[in-house]
Amino acid sequence: MKEIRNFCIIAHIDHGKSTLADRLLEETGSVTDREKKDQLLDNMDLERERGITIKSHAVQMEYTYKGEDYILNLIDTPGHVDFSYEVSRSIAACEGALLVVDAAQSIQAQTISNLYLALENDLEIIPILNKIDLPSANPEEVTDDIVDLLGCDPGEVIPASAKTGLGIEAILSAIIERIPAPKGNPNEPLQALIFDSVYNSFRGVETYFRVLNGSIKKGQQVKFLATGKTYSADEVGTLKLKQVPKKEIKTGDVGYLITGIKDARDVKVGDTITDAKTPTTNAVEGFEDVKPMVFAGIYPVDTEDYEELRNSMEKLQLNDASLVFQPESSAALGFGFRCGFLGMLHLEIIQERLEREFNMTVITTVPNVSYHAFTRKHPNTAIIVNNPADLPDPSGLDRVEEPYIKASIITKADFVGNVMKLCIDKRGIITNQTYLTTERVELNFDMPLAEIVFDFYDRLKTVSKGYASFDYHPIGMRTSKLVRVDILLNSQPVDALSSLIHADNAHNIGKKMCAKLRKLIPRQQFDIPIQAAIGAKIISRETIKALRKDVTAKCYGGDISRKRKLLEKQKKGKKRMRKVGNVEIPQQAFMAVLKLND
Image (tube, rainbow, N blue to C red; front, side, top):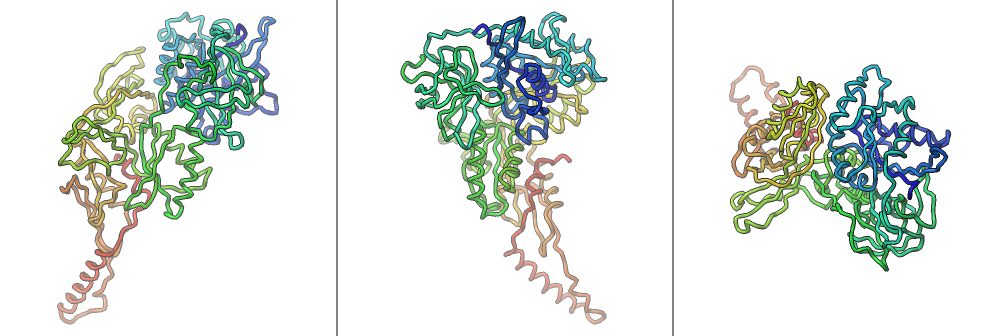
């Protein structure tokens, strides 16, 4: 155990985490020249294109330092706020963390939130100042920021450039000298923490774990505590770039386990693995089921593809256990699924993966969050509302609660006013404002999650000229005055366009939605009224005028009554058409609701 070091890398998006991992792999000789490529651990096309890490990865490196051989286990973590639970489990599996800060951009919101997670788990922090070769780098100032944040000596901050390989040796020696070796008792019953799982279509689910006490052997009967199921360890081994099967994984080490599980939902991140015969009495703390935060309907463009969409979603769920879905039907869109996501980025990724990996073109309805509704009959039983259509009748409604979050925004001092205005418009309540330096301010708000789901992120980047970084975590449910705004097209309600909105904004948003839809829905042979309604009360109306054939063109001269007669006949025809006509709604109309401020 003395030779093992377990560490992770924490950083804000795009601060050079994956590139630093590449350099560490090269320096320790873990990759051959043939296998080298940029962002080696990001193996999904989407990750490489967007430059973000979506899945955590783990890799083992061997390094000789002062004549002794060490085993370094790097557990790579996603940087985006949607995946913060995965990050917390990866951090729990380590003894140390490399805190990577971009010398040009300084400390950002997610760096701080992940740092707090690491400090809660008593990790040894090694601060690294990355990208010091950039012309826009500001090493002295950013080093001072890091010293203020961590309370360390300026000499402990390692200047590096992951692109050119500068400072990599200093980082490796710091990992060995500063990060403590794992603690644990090899003679106690097996206790291992699951920090990730990957689905392999040939071998089932591969579980990645870190042994805290005891050891795990090939062929041993193991039990997963959260699900209570027992499996046989068909194969255990360590994670180099390729898997290396071993007979036994000992205390303090990181490895993978293959048990032939076919359903990804049986392996929960944060669960504890133990021996089936002599189980451990205490599970690893901090386990929780992944809770979806954002809900949206996903429908096939062609109703006949419903079964195919179901198969695609099931296959996708094997790779991504945090996606939940259940069938639902809509009068406007036919059969589809109501899906739960971790956040907006997760929703975008799932939509994109459906299109790329399964060739499914889908219509996504307006995303919303999960509300709790209470009726007057049962004021203490919450009805969970994931779809605005499920909201009980307003006449019997007692109250509605919505999820709130604590948002932390770091921005330049010049943009504080703009950011505050944006957050207050979104019903945010400011709780704290701290100047980290004379130039940079951290603002804390309590805000409804529903307001973030729409265009908040884009607008934050706009008002701060790209200089604000944003991070949040849920703080529970609060009572709000919410109403359901329905959209009627040609007097028919379109359930896929209804949304739950705060009563103060309902008129305004209803008006904007009608105006937006008027521009997007193509004209028909008859007038189409677009109305926004709360219950039975219409709050706004727009009309799409009919396309008209000029029936009076052949009349010239003569009596006006001839023209009148032709126009009356046309009018009757239009009226009859409007009764039987139905209106096609283009995909942009569903997404228009998200971009009401454009």
